[in-house]
Structures are given as structure tokens and as C-alpha cells.
Amino acid sequence: GKDDGTNSAEHKNVKHLEDDDYVHPEMPKQTSQNLRSEKEPSDSTATTTTTTTDAEGGTVVVVENAAFTIDYKNVLSLLLISGLYACVISYLSFAFMLIVARSLIPIMLVFTILLLLCWGVFGLTITSYDGSVISLLGFSFLGLSIAYAMCSWNHIPFCSTNLYT
Image (tube, rainbow, N blue to C red; front, side, top):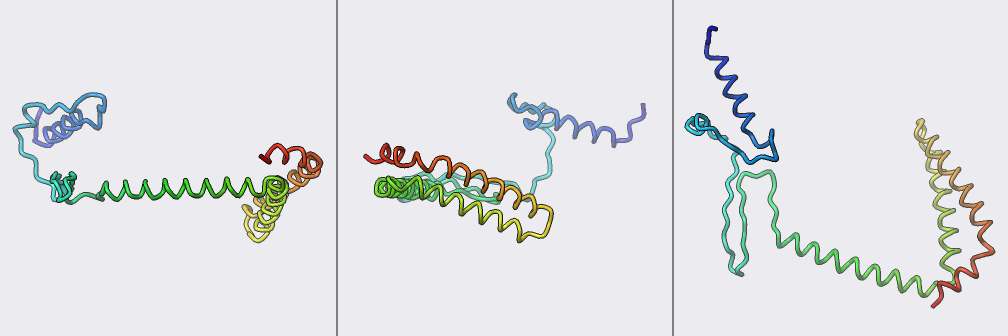
């Protein structure tokens, strides 16, 4: 066959893709000898990574021209703050549940009924087909919650004595 040069360029691109680790993620990237000897044009958006040590002795990784950077000290401080916040909130909610143990179940049943009523009314304010589905679901679950509250209201004193410690 006749080789006009375009076919060999396409072959090089296909060969490059065959050796790429994105095509075969389970295998390590292997570069053939002929591709290694060829010089590819440098990309202006190439990333460079440098690792240095800051004044406090920590390792700082700097990635230039990257889409984003991650400062691990900020990530760790964010994890610490959010963890402490979660502990404080869970402690306060547990203390609240101990304070209102006898009335916790009726409060939650009434809260559920009011929330579902708001859900159904919100669905009525939406003029599209989605609004009718939202209101239908809201009022359906409102009816089920009212029925459940009426059936279980007599059992609340027994259950709440089990909650009181």
C-alpha cells in the first residue's frame, strides 16, 4: 500500500493510546522505545509538583498550574472543627431528649403532622404537574401520620416511661 504520512501519524496516536494507563488501569504504564525517543510538544498547562518543608517542619506540596490545590492543614483543621461541632450538638440533643423524655413522642408526632401539612400546602403553591404530585404525596402521608398518631396516642405513656431514666 501507499503510505502518504497521514496513516503513520494516526498509527502513532493509536499506539500512544494503547500504551496509556487510562486504557489499561490495572497494568503499569509502559512506554515503547520508539515513543520514548520521539519528543512530544510540551503542554503549556502541564503541572509541576515540588515538595518543600515549611518553618514548622511540615511537608508542603506545591502543585503549579493545577486545577485546584489542597492545603492539608486546612483540611485537618476543618475535620477537627466539624468533629468537635458534631460532638457538642449530639451531647446537647441527648441532654434535650433527657429533659423532655416524657413528652418527646407526642412532640415528634405533632411535628411530623405539621411538617407534612406544610409539605402538602407547598405542593399546592406549585402550578406545574410536579406540584400536584408533591401535594398528593404530602396529603397522603399526612393522612397516614394522623391515623398512626390516633392509633398510638394511648400507648405513649408506657413508651415514654421507658425513655425516662
